[in-house]
Length: 360
Image (tube, rainbow, N blue to C red; front, side):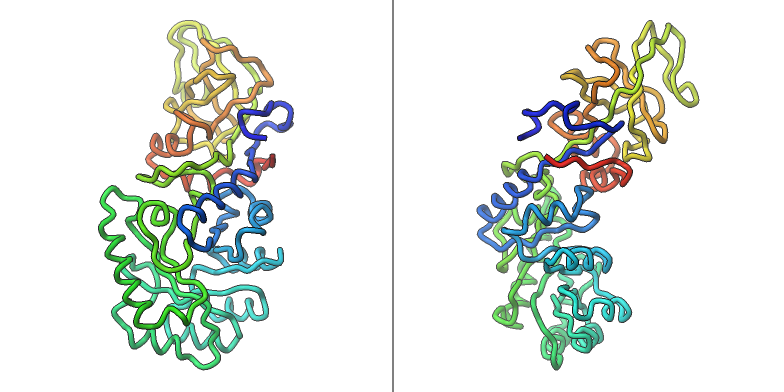
């Protein structure tokens, strides 16, 4: 079943819901592997970009051996599902101790981190800073990198870096990072590592990958990073119910601060999603939703629990559902992000926990 095949009213009973197509995630994963020829490390941090980590991991268990996360709690969640996690952020000693005996590998960036990992028997992926300057050992400092690798009893599972311009129009610096990383791995010896990975979704889809693995996040969830055009299946849509409809006379307003005043007679839908559900406040009097095939502009200020859409020229009834995010055109994640000065990652991950996830 795909988004074009189902009746929203048949599967959603709440005031709103995020509908997730798990088969699309699996298909996108296969496509990424086919395109890159590399092993896939699935990025499932932030509850799998808001899609539900447990369900996403379950949909990928036959294709993916390693799942990347950002926090210890996320790593332990993956391990509790019987899967291998990789913690992308170097942990503190207390965090390292908490991971002892768990099915988790961690990033390390210095000799102290390597010694702690060896002490607690936690396998590592060495983080190399090739220019992003977020964390990682300086790629110039080969001596430190060699000492990390030679730490007694250390289980060295992987080595990685992260591109900072792969989704920019000018990706030249990412190619510089790629060259720096390849030099580093060459000096250290690629055969030391089960996983050698640098490319995020944009890097994986935009230029030839180095190493033997890629870390896919955004593409896995059905969205092409900027300047990438890979065929991907749509994974999710966010729907809100039309709770009520109202008629505004000329000069009447709706919502806080009278931010929208009707110019003529208008028919308004009150939608069951607001900024507490993840609908950006910045869309006030600016965004739009899709209801029964009609693009309906959002009017007035977004409330905590609801929003307003002009349905004057649309066939809309109470109980219908509006596509708030998803699909193509104005409601697509990338389009909404552009309108709000944001990025698709933020739009996805800010869909609130109180919004039910419905899986098809």
